Length: 219
Image 1 (cartoon, rainbow, N blue to C red):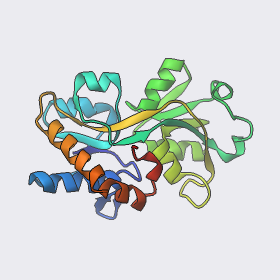
Image 2 (image 1 turned 30 degrees about the vertical axis):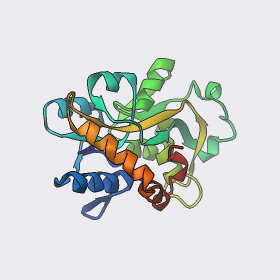
Image 3 (image 1 turned 90 degrees about the vertical axis):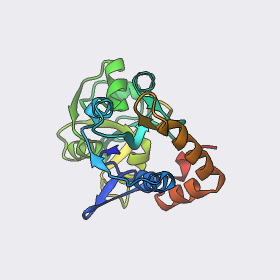
Image 4 (image 1 turned 60 degrees about the vertical axis):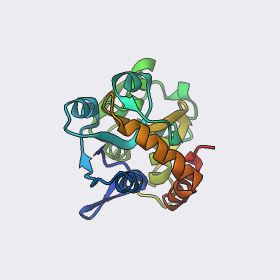
């Protein structure tokens, strides 16, 4: 499975990968009788890696977009999501709306849903390898703001969190998260059945509570 360092979905704990998606993918692998290998990838290269057979799926809080759904086989959604603007706490009072943020210099993960939104709005931005790098750039005041998944933003910013000097300004959209496979893969149907069963038996809800993302669970 292709992943990135994206807490609380997939993140390193020593030599191991942990997180909501890491555990969910492991449970799916056990269900179908295969060994899960999590491989950190360049997110902007995910589709090529999948098509070339270098990875068998993308399981990393992946936002379902029309472009992805056209190029790969996507599962049914298993969590809700949104892209949000995150800035330094010193600027929170100054920038309260999308319009007020339009002249800021953004940094976003290359190939992310955040980059798509900024490109569509013609906002100024630079790209980086991961959303974690983007958060650090804003924390260090090398850039003004980033656009990242609300799941990651809520987990990592605000009082008591790793990036406690950063805060969420506003949401840009509403999204759904899914798993990606190669076109024609039988695994898409398999994972859809697995996700449905995980909702029915409560295991997804329990896992979401463990990682503090209860608000992302689908109704």
